[in-house]
Image (cartoon, rainbow, N blue to C red; front, side):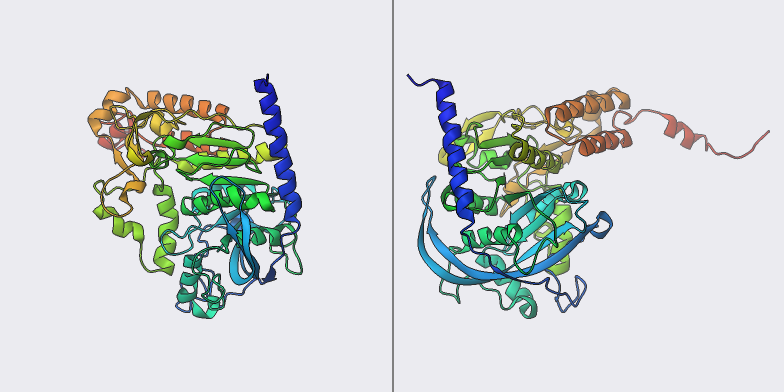
Length: 489
């Protein structure tokens, strides 16, 4: 009779064996030819467009970071990718040339040893670094290196039309003979090989990486999941994978590396809840309440670059068409993303199992694996990881919306009215104490990092929640024209 303990031992053995085969086979992955860094003759926004597309407008330099772009080229395989099974090579020797963008600490003293390699998302017809948009603050403060990889035809074709002078030689279709993204998997592997085993051009500028984490968000997370299930078992340079909003797509039980999913409300409703997988030897997932597939923080980060480089904002055009036009939930998804990335690193580097996430409560399931989340009287989701913005709410933050186009996945934010706030919080002190209690608990459980916990409490202190409509010190000061004037009369 096989015991549960024996089954777990076998599972661990086979997972370790698969990982060993995969990483040893990674040595056979060819190194691409690397050119660069590619010089920019213009500042971002210049009409010549001779600069890095979506060059970051975040404070890289003052945080000790540099941004550089490189071209990589080589030959790639096409693969058969059966669901939840190891694939096979269909054909080889297909030429490609694409680009990678590197944001890294300028000094080894700042580098924490981990490189986040992001598969660019091309849902909107251009390369979008959505993981970076979610997590850039944490990446900079923690010393991660980040590398974006242009692996897909849509993104590369847009680069070529956006700046023919800079990107005109790029091609991931072998001269138009491959009309899908069949080469993307090897491109993503070879980009990592260029990082891990640099040739004459070291894209990390001498930094020595210990961990390479493959990552992607939404559409690119879907591609990455296929890579993990079918291509990575044949060999991969990556050590772990972080899938942000990969939904409705299971990961094989014997996945070759630690794989971590973070899921938001829309992700659960659009297929993931019906296909949930239990945490296991090499798979872990977190679910976060009050969060949309794409949120306000991402919009604040991405929209300025869209306006600068594309002269149009897809979010600004979309918002008025949605039933709730205040699109983008404002629960800070990125706080949980930061904690998840750190947890994945500890899992891989120190074998410390990530904290277990509560599950989102599901009210009902419908056709096509659709689900409806259970909600309270404020329409807030029940269950899952609950940051203070949900556990101590001052607004509706809902991960679903209605209307045309992409409205559904943006969700919405709607502040509570004065009467509701008065009914919830007797005083500002009560409100802050509740925020502190919830945030301390999330910090203890590992769902938020210490800097973000501090930021949460400071934000609560800076508000006047609990003072609405009540006379306090500031009102008295205003009414009495309180000043430091000397007046002895």
